[in-house]
Length: 375
Image (cartoon, rainbow, N blue to C red; front, side, top):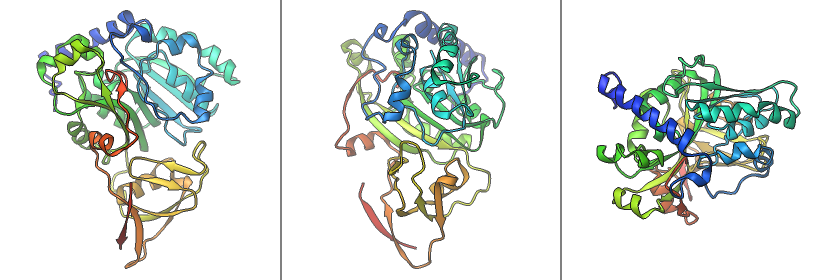
């Protein structure tokens, strides 16, 4: 793991922050300023209720959006959300409509130029949504130091991040700080870029590759270990798409490295929470998922259908905001149940397995069958 205590590492971190702030605050004024096909959103269909929310975002905010993927967790009404690296605030404003007037969204970013754009349109969006008072605010700070930015521990239900982790010089601190601000049962739901192996130091020092969200990408196996070390339960892989560079010069520098844009869910479960398999029934009351809920690459719940889930998933559903959306039954000893096939956490394997996987023209910028089991 990264050593964040030595002066040389701190100096490298400060230099990286300065570079990223310049890159996203001065070099990039709009999406078309990217040096390649970076930051292309994922090609999954966008649900109508999210399309509607996105359609109400001010064009100036959308023009400075550099994210990848669609980072919109389900069941967010009334929740407190935090957006790491919120940029111009597109995702914050979209989610501020989805959480409703009784929910709240905070965006944190280290780039003042981006925050100026975000703050400029608070009144515009609140009037657009018909809210009497703002349910969104923007904080200047580093995602590696959320407490220093004034964010309280155990104060958020959900934290989202859209292709920001790879830009951080201290990913351990980002995950640890995120864990601390989440309530028990809270979730980090985020999209990012992952590499097929550890990136060499020579490439990590390339400012263009770092700014284009490539040379700072974590090897996916390092990410899994890091998440669990911090305290999260085993990550749940949601989606993954192959990322193509689309720039001959950058491709030559990168050589055999491959990249994917992947979405993971990380849950902060209460200490000593029971993790035993159970039968669950989805009630169908989540907005946009009235008939079925695609929770991750392993579990897809159909309304009123009985399904057996593993211990981690059972604990997640019982201890998170999803607890009222499911009914739970005890497994009968000796009985046989239909169980979803266990899925790998490898995002590269997921892209290979999916017939629908498409190669995205992006630098990666910001952005099965069932089996029988007897109990």
